[in-house]
Length: 104
Image (cartoon, rainbow, N blue to C red):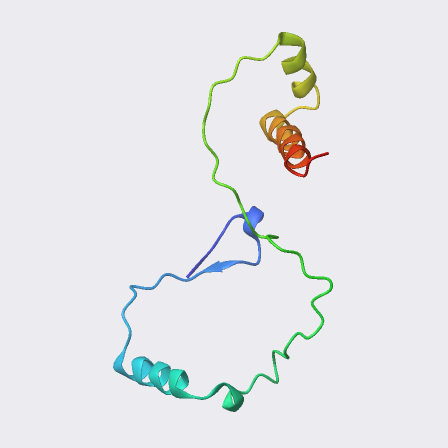
C-alpha cells in the first residue's frame, strides 16, 4: 500500500494481482446464491425517497482534442480569468447545446 500526494490525502491505493482464492470464490458463490430477502442490509438501508436524486451526477463525457479558430478578442476574454479557459469554453458551448436541444 502507498499513500498518494496531498491532492489525494486520505486515499489509499491497494494493488491486487486479480487472483481469486478458492476460499473467496466459495464465499462469493454462497453470497450470489442468497435470496435478496436474506441479505442483511441494515448497515446500508434501502432508499425509498428518490426526490433528491440527481441523474448522471458522476457522468464524465469523453473529451476529444480539436483545433478551433477563435477571434482574438474572444480568446482573450476566455483567458482573462486564468487557467481553465478551455473548460469555460466547453461549459458555454454545452449550455447553448442543452438550451437548443430543449427548444428554447
